[in-house]
Image 1 (cartoon, one colour):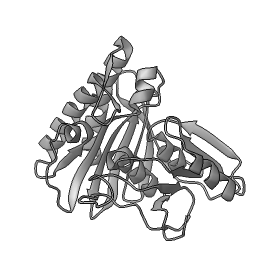
Image 2: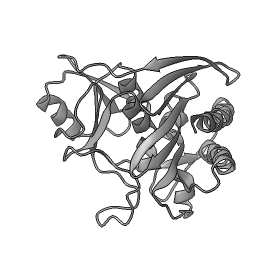
Image 3: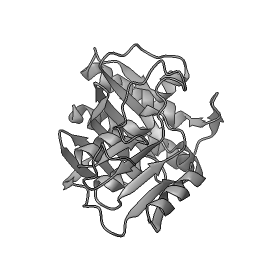
Image 4: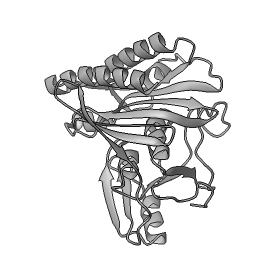
Length: 264
């Protein structure tokens, strides 16, 4: 499965980089979030690859959902965010990512996060996570196993560059965390996964396609993502009374061996 994810992500990243280098305008979706032709083109590439490889598995993809194309899901499905960090993309920053994840029984079992402007990707499945180094020809040149680091006494936190909140500051103070770095997109999960940081609290809204691939990589590397009641974040949340389908609650992602059942 990760081989198919890799092919799809690299092809999507190639298309995204051409548009990134050429420059492109953005428009606003109904929820006022930005979208570009890069989002749309990358999503078409990924969907075509996944449908060819796994024709019976439903695909929940961000731009398709925005257009009203939402297939019925069973216990297993794909989650796709073709361009996470669209604001970074528009602003000329390089932190945007391609995200593909496989969900089974509410858990992210496999995923890839590709940052084409940085020439790196992260993949995870079956308790094995890797960092991939990718050249200018969109070929993988090297792979390195990654693992979360044990929770140190002086923990490093990560926060969203575009969606930070006062509640984040409260969390950092309550947990005696003095160091915090802001970074865009799903790369925050990957920094935890490769042992460069320790905790990522998120107290503003996300959707499942925003988090699934990075969460899959983090869990494969030994980390966890829990809701504020201390339970693992789940996927496939439809018919929610308090929010739209596939919307996430607030959550905290941990590196180290923090228990998934420990209250955040």
